[in-house]
Amino acid sequence: MEMLITEHTKSATAPTLIVALLTVLVGCASEVSPPPEQILGIWSTDSERYAGRTFEIRTDAIVFVTGEFSPPILHSLAQAEALPESNSKSRWRLHYRETDGTISTLDLDYRPTPEPTLQFANRKEIWKRVINKKGASDA
Picture 1 (cartoon, rainbow, N blue to C red):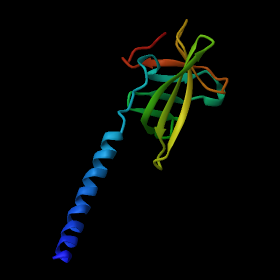
Picture 2: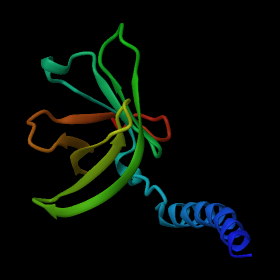
Picture 3: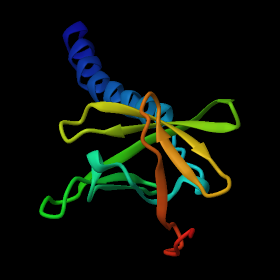
Picture 4: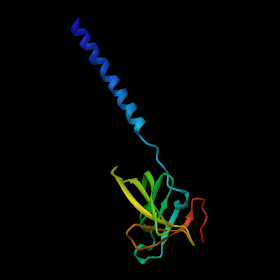
């Protein structure tokens, strides 16, 4: 009788553990917080170093275009978070998935006026929005 109880307990425990683990994982998975509307759109810079390059911030992804003959590189967005503001600019940290599945971060400074601009943290190039999320130019 003891052997039957042990075998029954073992067979019932495995599915129970799997269900419990999946419940915890699904429950702990946080919803992706999308980036704010003001930074959505396609951005480019006048810097010669990045001639012909753009990047797009979507609610679900970041897309880098690295040249006319290169395919766009799409990274799914994992999270967007607001960082403390400083010097009349908002700072946003975007967490995105690399092609190998690892998470990388990108810190951006946003200035709304007179024309919306983005600047990668610790970089000097200023990026201007070419097309906003509605498909219109800011200019």
